[in-house]
Image (cartoon, rainbow, N blue to C red; front, side, top):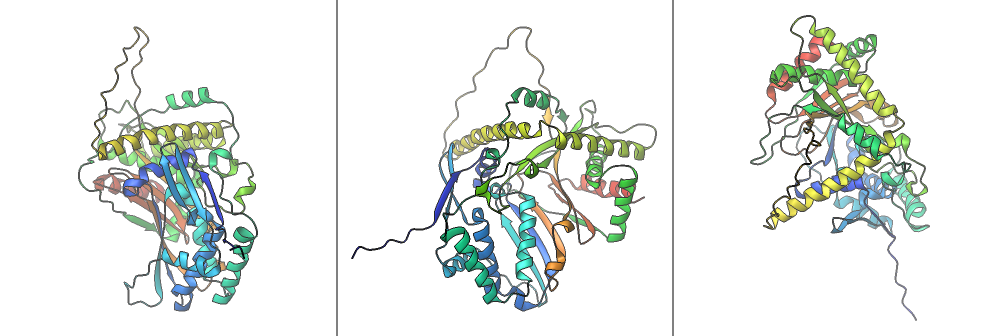
Length: 452
């Protein structure tokens, strides 16, 4: 009799330009890799390893990029590969292999979860939605057998009864509009002449100072911002701007300070059947906020702060609501992809001892050269907003989340401020390296302007 060869459920697709721009630099030391730490109190039976493994297996089937691997043939041929599990035991065993348990506390009711993911798989919104779904399954009244039945149903629907699919790249799901001229004109307006002192020598060392503002003071901050017609996110751009001016006492105050932040592109994406209901994919663009770098010699610094917060609001709103935001996102993705490939090749050549050729000097045309305008960003802000709108605490009443810390691994000298509201508290994280004075000025400015 002829033998029957069982086919492994398989699918693959090329990485999009934005995904490539995150994948290539992550190869060496995990640059941009995301983490999410959640502390909670829970009954021990809900967090036992077999139960966690089943929940993790369910979510890996629902979101196949989490169970995919990457094959890189060359800088222009990088592919996601997904082999779906053929059985429940295989799905659970595969999920369990990517779990790690540690016993570091004598408190049997307090647990810490650390969820890690590469940034080319998804963004912060995907990470937090995943955490909510994870705890909703983990803290549900379903028994482990019930969860296994859920896993079986997902396997049948997504892997076994039909060919598995992967979410399409963001660039495939945004309208194709030719707008290179608009993109170039927009980029020329981005002027920034300030950066933190950087020292790339030696090992990278990252620490994450975190402040938590209690519920009462968080309410006060929200009221102060609302009264002045700005959001907390806009106010934080101004906080960093004032803190930098007080830290650096810049001599080149004629150049403004520029900061960047991510722009959620999910509302702009076209419907895609291959996506199914997976939210694990990367869908972000970027925008910049440019503010003066000096402080007034006379008059109220408080008035200056609120004017700059309002300016940040206007700039952020224009970036998000612009009819050209989608086309700018596509052009930025192309540019990031090109630069990522160029830098990756330079790094790979350096690691192999290949000496790069000397740069080609192109003589400038008489009368046509223009001085290069600096466009350096001081830092990035990741403004996650009110995460209590994502975490449905009522869906897992037996699990009491009390702490949330999130971030992404930065390059040496990289600066990224996270701000979010969680369990009715405002949290600020700053990944810092030798920026103690700036951080102290950030905290001081929060108390001076937002808590008065």
